[in-house]
Image 1 (cartoon, helix red, strand yellow):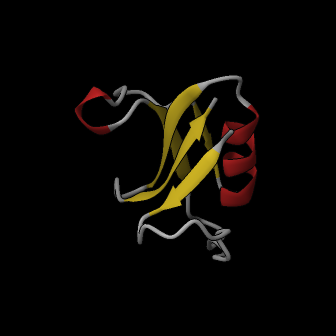
Image 2 (tube, rainbow, N blue to C red):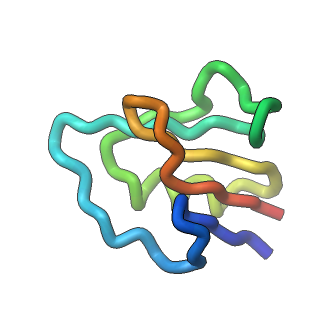
Length: 76
């Protein structure tokens, strides 16, 4: 079962809307094992979360342009 963990630790859907110029990146891995290059980029956070949920397995982090972690998705 896939689960998303937002930065505050709650398992609630993300309700935020990015500004038009904000870009998000999806990275594979967790903690210090995080890949240095993103596997996907985009300006629609909800679409990126859905994409990560649809993957057959893996641990993904979504970060904003400054590198701040917004969500973690564990797909299994």
